[in-house]
Length: 205
Image (cartoon, rainbow, N blue to C red; front, side, top):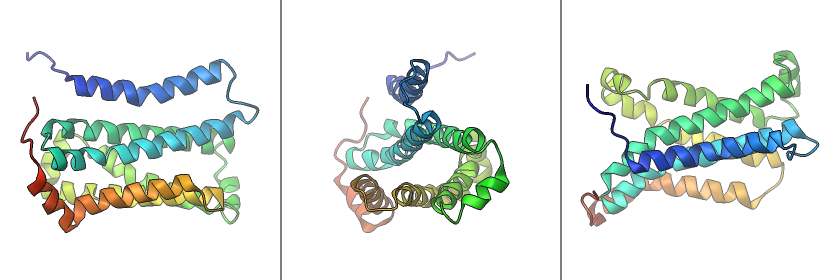
């Protein structure tokens, strides 16, 4: 049996990814979430989900800029943590806020259409999370990469969900949208070829 090898980068990634959840649970335990406990928890988990969704897109860009291939190892981990926070966010909103009353939730959609954008993002992330394993990579072959490019669509819908929630222009959603656009450009445009040529460090050990 081969010994389990865990890199320092993977350990740091897990610590950083779990820290917001621990902080949220601690704040709940200490009753520091304010009078609107469910609303605050919903907002925090939504922000965490968006942050880790954006972070899951950065290893590809970092690898192309620096040639550091090992950073790609945490791409799947970051993506799964993003999905985890999305699932918690959805559970709090649908389960704790609406008591799993889907009829009531549907009635509120005309007044809160941003929910549809968030739900669409979650529906896209579900198959991406399911097919994130090595076994699914082998089964799907080249189609795996095509399928997982949908993460950019999920990211766009998540940004729309975030921005639409405010019902007015805010700087935070705008900055996240710009970050997503830059990551998309680095992935799909001729800039990607430029980044490959500019990679100066083939491998950091």
